[in-house]
Length: 293
Ligand SMILES: [Zn+2]
Image (cartoon, rainbow, N blue to C red):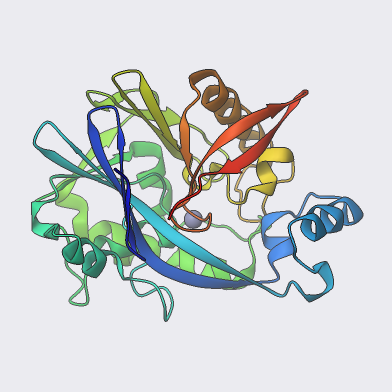
């Protein structure tokens, strides 16, 4: 049976034993611009009001960060490592893993969906060294190359305070674990039943992760879908999306995949534990969060 702690939510996908594990929360300012820069403002305001958000007062988006642990065939696989020291309330992943009886030293595989600080920030600990000494890290080569080459983001729409954070990701969070990295390509199996789904746009080599076991499916959409409103409005790109047109088509690809598989869907930035399903509504889609106790 699924079991809920505040910070760890256990469930199964076929034979895979999974747990959404919280890394904490982070507060983003000017969220309408951050998440929905391409949205016509009146329509956005209507959508926000419909989910109980007063658009005039929406100055802060407090995002949950939730990573995913998958145990299968003696392997312990972690998808993303959270924000580390990014904010005052991030970096709780390893403590929450330990509280759930999982020693970070026993994680053997880490899949990094993309090189943003909220997903790779926990790669290293307070001493600047790998927080997962016995793991192999899997990352798309193009993504690694982009963030370790001091990318010039100045022509993009990414807010200045986030650009600053992103500039440090390569030297502080990626290069220290370089010897532990195995490069992968999009659309390949990482392990049996664990697939890298190429979904570029949010970043150049962004991945979603598909789990399949015994006819059950889970789709970890990571930052291809940042907010449930993106499910209804896949063309409303975020200012943090590096190539917005690609981001929108990746979103549609995931929505079609999720509905065709009737997959459980996990959103890293959705309210913890981030799980639900995608419903088809006419030509479009709608988020149906899973009720958890
Ligand atoms: Zn993110």
